[in-house]
Length: 176
Picture (cartoon, helix red, strand yellow):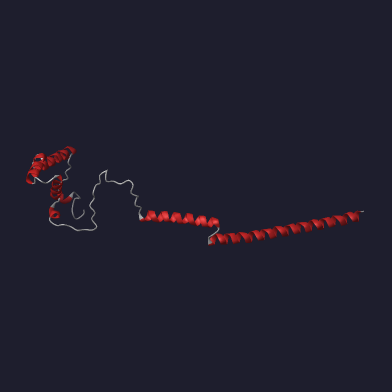
């Protein structure tokens, strides 16, 4: 038997599982507590905020609510983190459709690569690249070799025919 005795849950506690109904009841209770902590009516609070500052508009109340949302030390210390980007939602009217789409570095490099390849193919087909010139020179050499080989074949064929004709001529003379 192992040292610890039985293998059971952590420190002998029994495991408890909550039912979905209990979870729903807890969620409702938390919502009610939050509403009571806020002061009950939201309309009464906005009236009080407007009474305190008669010249202030809805912009000031938005700033106050954002300060209230901060929890703990976050409200006391102003953080200057250059890596932290606050996400600001844009309205539909603020979005500019005419603005050109910003491409990533990889996308830009891929497009440049494709354009360079197309330019090279055009130059290659026109015969202006070093590789195209080398290919054309190689083709010219191969054509000359093939022409010479064809010419030699023709000469050999003619020589064989002449020899065969001469042999036939001798054979025909010898038969007579």
